[in-house]
Amino acid sequence: MPGLYLHIPFCKQACHYCNFHFSTNLQRKGEMVEALLVELERQRHYLQGAPLTSIYFGGGTPSLLSGSELERLFEKIYALHPVDSDAEVTLEANPDDLSPDKLKALRDSPVNRLSIGIQSFSEADLRYMNRAHTAAEALTCIENALAAGFVNLTADLIYGAPTTDDAQWAYNVRTMIGLGIPHVSAYSLTVEDRTALAHMVNKGKTPPPDEDTAARQYEFLMDTMALAGYAHYEISNFAQEGWRARHNSSYWLGEPYLGIGPSAHSFNGVSRQWNIAHNSNYLKLLTATNAGEALWYETETLTPVQHYHDRLLTGLRTSWGFDPAGTPSPFKEHFLEQVRPYLQQGLVELHRGSYRLTRFGKFLADRITVGLFFG
Image 1 (tube, rainbow, N blue to C red):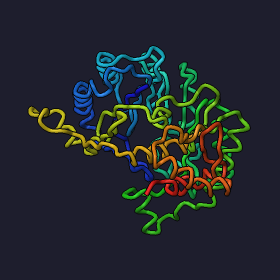
Image 2: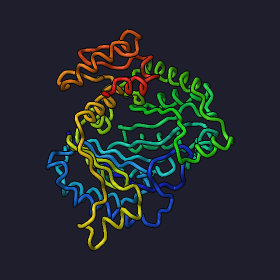
Image 3: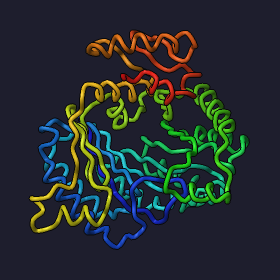
Image 4: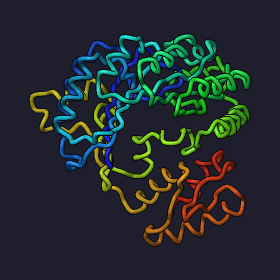
């Protein structure tokens, strides 16, 4: 069933590793909300009236939205779309935004799931990443969210940073488990183009992440989360029973979704489209008098090869894997031939009719996926 994503392109400050689309200039936040309302109206038929099973506020930093701004967006969403009564409604939040008053306001809204950007419980890690919150806030915001009545929580961690030794990483993982967070996402620090981290690495101001350290810490993560009862259901995601992310799972399952806001992507099963990743131009195109004459997005109709590649990319990342049944020729035959060496090497396994990465295969996910591409 379809999901709705809203990209809120603002942050208090730029994290050194982040290459997502955002601005640290918050002066036009009110205008952006108005433009999001316009786009919601103009894209009201994209999902063809199917009920929403998930709504996701991402960014950027959606927790920068005021209560009244969130209320206006929800009013528009519920006016335009049927929404399941038990829909998962997620808002990404930074720890420094989650004051008791903010949490109370969120509890009074349709938001029923928080995705908190913890990244680490270490002050050294947070300063290295240029996060806006402190180690103390990383801990207290989760305690406050639980006290405010939020049960459905997910939090992010980053491993492999030069400041994150194995002892600190073990502390980060065990602290998260000890807090009772039902869902955890963990990502290896990567050097993305056009980021502050890339500049610092290129100038020799900081060493690049060490691959051996990242691999060792990922192994510890997998072992520790499994012992604590978390299912490793996607390469970067771990969940207790019943707490998988519904919205992100819809991406991996190839279900339709509508993306609203600068840089947001949409998919309807036939084509995909992506919005312009430029705040000022997005605002002009959505709010100009002649807005109906200009598109703020580009569209691409997927070829059979692209459909096959997308299914591979998403399916192999998950515990349910890629099922070649129903895959048209010649892609099915190609896959079954190309997957043989990975099966023999113990990098891929057959499980209930689907092919999925083994523990060792997860370390080589990108290489294996590309090796299974067609052509």
